[in-house]
Image 1 (spheres, rainbow, N blue to C red):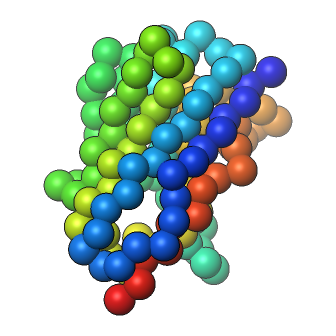
Image 2: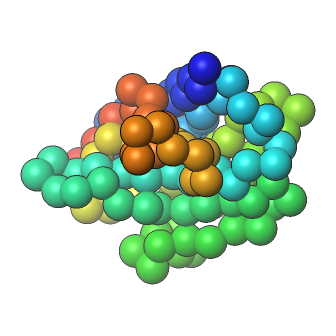
Length: 118
């Protein structure tokens, strides 16, 4: 059974930083591409960043240069460092194993709320 437990969100002022963590179980973590998504109020969930098992990363244009995705395969954990935060970064952040599906959808955890005040 796939389990995803996100943490590290909070309320921060614009320009501030947060570090999100996602503990993963139920999969062979090291071989899976992991991704972070976010969902702002009233908007669809969107991809933020991805990282391969060997550490190759990709980012959405909106966060490139401000966010950093990383992973620790020994701890089955993926991270997202959020720097230079903007109010438009507000939303619920989720991690997911990119290549795995359940009933046609990604696996999702409960997410972690990030709120950036102006």
